Amino acid sequence: MSSTASLLVLALAGLLLVTFPGLCVGTAAAHHRRPNGNQCHPSGSLEGPSTGHICGECCKPGHLYPKYQCSPPVTKSTRAVMTLNNFEEGGDGGDPSECDGKYHYNTERVVALSTGWYNHGKRCGKNIRINAKGRSVLAKVVDECDSMHGCDKPHAFQPPCEPNIVDASQAVWDALDITGDEVGDYPITWSDA
Figure 1 (tube, rainbow, N blue to C red):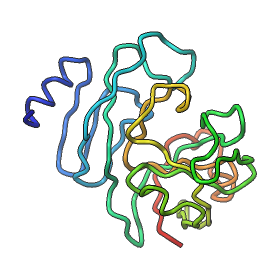
Figure 2 (cartoon, rainbow, N blue to C red):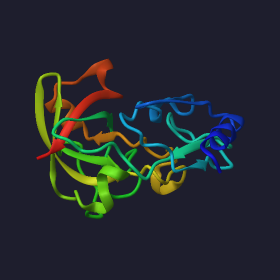
Figure 3 (tube, rainbow, N blue to C red):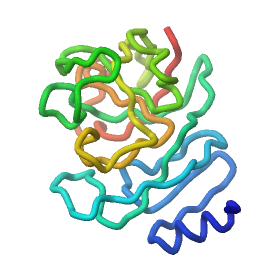
Figure 4 (spheres, helix red, strand yellow):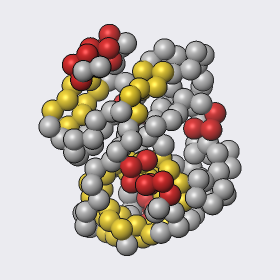
């Protein structure tokens, strides 16, 4: 299917997708529609479940959500969006962390990376350096912010992640002194440590 036909199918399915070089903006699930900083285009779509679930960021029945196999290239100052994740059992992270099969306390500086950056687990257990507000913090990669799957129980019924997400524990946010209304979707840079 051509890219024009794909965009038409997505638009007809209720997902308006406008693409400019280096910018991808849409109307589906505001939490997951962010500029991705490169030419990383969706590699397909995922339909929401047939029934609704009660949560702020849950997939909506019948909606289509883009999937991404890629992420922007990693540099010494990779631009990303940091989101908040609860890695504890029963938290919004869903199943245990992909890297070690364990849950992690919110007092630990841990992150999940979008599928492309997670790179089939090659960053598991390694630290990345996150920079924001003139501060810097190290955080350990323990999970994947799955950009290819979602809208099911293992993914807490959330849509697939955008390709430029660093999903961080509360301890990371605290170390960067990002509090109150700033917590949510926050622009950061990161690099391998």
